[in-house]
Length: 234
Image (cartoon, rainbow, N blue to C red; front, side, top):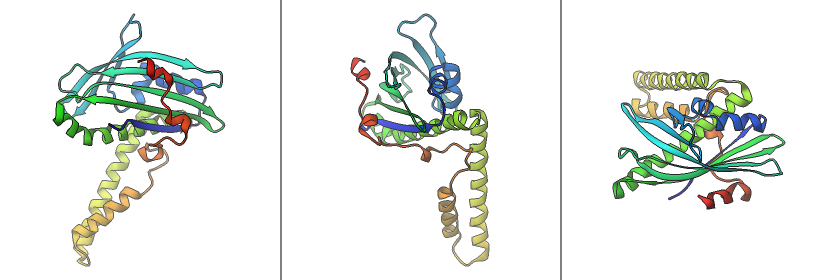
């Protein structure tokens, strides 16, 4: 199974990026993959519980275990964790991943690599063909929402509202264009609708609207591609 990789360049101090990603209260504000993140008091190693809405009316719960962190003299940091769910309705059974923080002249390269084992046997592996890309997209969208917050001062809540408004406006524009093409009679309505939908898809998003396309989805160099040795201890 192909691991999920996402990287964003965030023009902010590393301490600010660290705090926004390591603090559960801050984390759940920008990460669309989680509706709730609650640390387990007194747990060693640190544990947390999470809940996420997979579909309308379907919320699944899971757990995470902080597996350690490393801070190196060059300023880079790594945080690793295990995660999973005991809920039989959850496609994810168990998994592991890491966050890496690489400070540089233009900001912090904040990246993640993770993978998981699906449950439900052959049916789960089939469902994962659609779920894994969607999960990767949600990760990238969330990373860009974090970037907008820390680098441009756009709170996660406002960024989400911007995204909803922009998707709505594009959908209305596509429908109006399709209807206009059909009314004109010069081209079939379906052709006009497809042309408008294609234009709406490729139109760049507003600078303050999160977009998964702004994030790198493959490692750019060997440093990013190499899993941290911390994961070998999981």
